[in-house]
Length: 106
Image: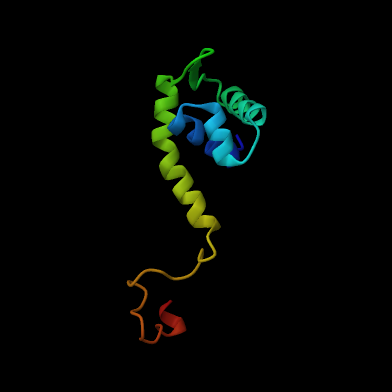
């Protein structure tokens, strides 16, 4: 299953605000477009993420679980997409100011 991270980000915005209009404003998209993204994500996952009525939005148990899981998922995606992706960031490889190990040791 291909996972659309834009839909996950849209879900997180709604889950954190519990308000479609406010989340849409935060994402700089229209409320109907946001609603379509959430509905598409629910269809893709085969679960209902929100309880909705005309006045309130609440997370379902599945929505609460996805919100908890989304933080690590989006953090990994952001790390992969960062400009520094692939740059050595661990001091275990070599200390700043020292020479990298010879090629035969890499």
